[in-house]
Image 1 (cartoon, rainbow, N blue to C red):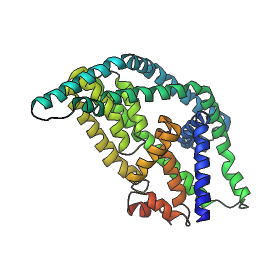
Image 2 (cartoon, one colour):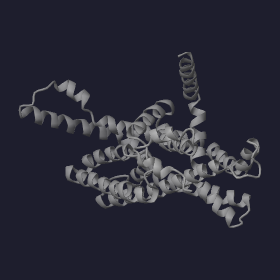
Image 3 (tube, rainbow, N blue to C red):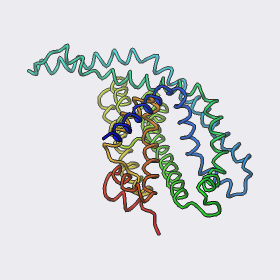
Image 4 (cartoon, helix red, strand yellow):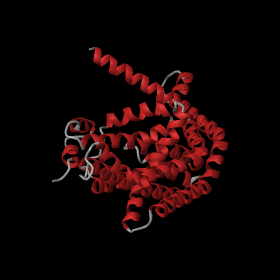
Length: 343
């Protein structure tokens, strides 16, 4: 009992410290996330006998180029969207008020003021605007994030050897560490490519339908695709509401259909074939991770919550003593068989 209370107290203290250090931890976690995504590319360049310094320079140049393109394509869209946000909210409130009056005229009696407060779709648009603003604020630390990525990639090259030496296994390969690194790189590599495919398909579909800011919504779909199930819903709702305001109910239905088709094709058909079931998380774990990390670190914490939880799950499954915890975090019994290392 006393030990349990001590562990709980330590957990509360650690969480309070993380929340207090949010402004410092969020750029660092983003740096780790970016470094892990590009780590397989670094390993591939090293296999091709590219000098380490040149390989890191090439990767950093690629990161800067991608960030510059995103800034050009999305920066103005985010500013325009936030400027037009009050108008969108007003129109949504008018449409929801008209719907409530229409229902009231057909015999559905309820407190109009209470329903307007409870049923407020404009709050979704406000949440989308605040989330985009949060990402913009984080990216003001772009130089710090980039510098941290450089040091992480440079440190990664000799990390395995130092860890083996620290554990007195120098000269013997650490199989558990190798499995963990391969699993993490495989997951992030495949998930990043599938998320990119999701974002591109969303951009194309919204551009065809004529919805405003298609590249911005595609970027949001790319980022939130790292969050299983819930992320696709969060990405789709504000886009559907914008299509409803801009183009009407029929186009909003087509937008919803497009998101549904893309997420079924990529998330339910393509992703399991490439990744297997072993890295799936329980829906309860996904929800609790989103709530917890969103509360601790804000919108960026929600984005990073699932990749971080997946990495913890992989680490647990690659150790015999803690594999049962990784299995409990999974979506079902199949996660154990597919996650277990092959002999």
